[in-house]
Image (cartoon, rainbow, N blue to C red; front, side):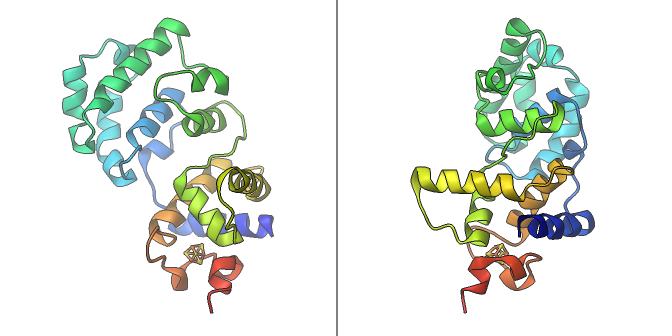
Length: 210
Ligand code: SF4
């Protein structure tokens, strides 16, 4: 079942997935900036800002030297004013402590503003790891699709296990973006659009709702 879900998702995503420039980069710095920008902000909003940001501050060293006011101005449309300060602080910490973005997920997690999700994204997209990438969207889809109704730690364990079971060995990054796009287009928090959803035939929630 896991392989079938991944196959359907990847096939759907190759035809209908959303395309964003920040999803193409293999540069850990670019991924880090994008993931910080994506917090509480839509991918479409980030797409309007990220390319120009990367032109203005192309390296972590450039960002570490940046004037916070200038960064604030550049990313003002994303909201959350403090994010500019956080980005510069993070860049300074990386440069001072490691010299470059570390590969180790535990070292990544020790950086200010970098939690498990962002650390796992960086390690998986840029450093050859294959770690679970579970945010609130992925969590919602997996719970609905697999009929997980448990709460708390038990749910966390089940969701992680389900993710590891479904995630393909190759196309790991595309698989993750497929889940995010499914969440944005069909499996929305309220009023999911199940009738048009590409995975409805393998979704337990959909198939038990009659
Ligand atoms: S069928 Fe509905 S509940 Fe199931 S994954 Fe698709 S949108 Fe979500």
